[in-house]
Length: 146
Image (cartoon, rainbow, N blue to C red; front, top):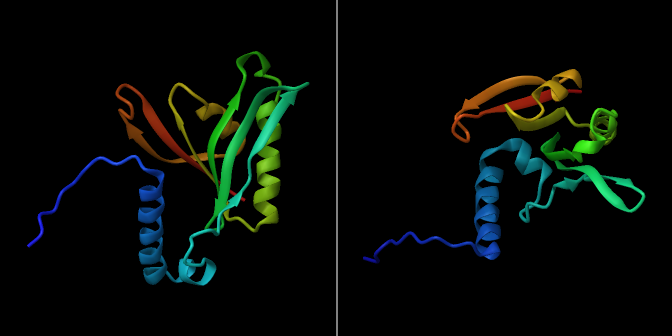
């Protein structure tokens, strides 16, 4: 019998292989995934936004659409440009793209020292929280149904 070993591996190819195999399992066991994605797991729609002041990047959002949800992974505005409604304007762009793609809603996460109030002002609600992630910080999971 072969000896099973666990080793750390940061190779991107391994990440792709594991992701593909998990997707195949999910596709076999979830009707929605089976009907709406192929074996390559490439059903994501990338939907990023960048904000410029002249040629300088002053903010933006990184996200994608998958499983009829917009996953907002990162939203950042340079501190000297905050309080000018730039983040809210990006959120409106994200909502428009999500609606064009018949999304159920938008999902995101934020830490207790970041932007919970901003998201709530933009119609999001907290649906879960994880304490001490990292230690001393609360991680909030938010959604906005469209």
